[in-house]
Image (cartoon, rainbow, N blue to C red):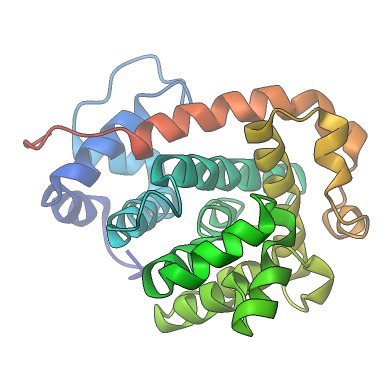
Length: 260
């Protein structure tokens, strides 16, 4: 997918070899998120409609979900984790569009993978992770601080290191490392700020918070970085969350193991 001369036909051939991704791609382009009048029933047409960037997002998202298995339920409910991750990803992409950011679709992956470092800690240091969760009492906004105290590093450090090992772009690495502390970021500042806002909205939605409470968790300086305002976003939140549910249904729903 990174090759500039790779045709839609060639991409369709490659995607067709993965039944799971093929099914999710067809479900995505036939969802209300795209709003097409006629049903898409071939991988080649789905690839043409979705485009290379959206297809890359889908593959990265599906691959990330597959990569983390066997984490004890007492540490994290994986369904809830990925629901929050996808919501943050969709919100990040939509906020990027509002900000007129270039290639806004890249913010989906940045938002979805922002917390992947937590999963690495759960897998590799489960006992320490449990101690940290007991101290925080479920307060995610102090999680990184407690991790620093207990481990000497935090999930943002781990997530950034993992993405470096995966050879992912620098903008994704910066988001992973700074999403709770956007003022610590250097470049690209806008990406980190956008995901920080999306994270606050997604976390607030899961906790049943009001819009005012969601915005309370946002660092004031991020608004200048994005060019957005609370007044601009507030009336759009319900629609953005609704669209995130549509994408969530595509990425997280189980697929039948047969050729789509």
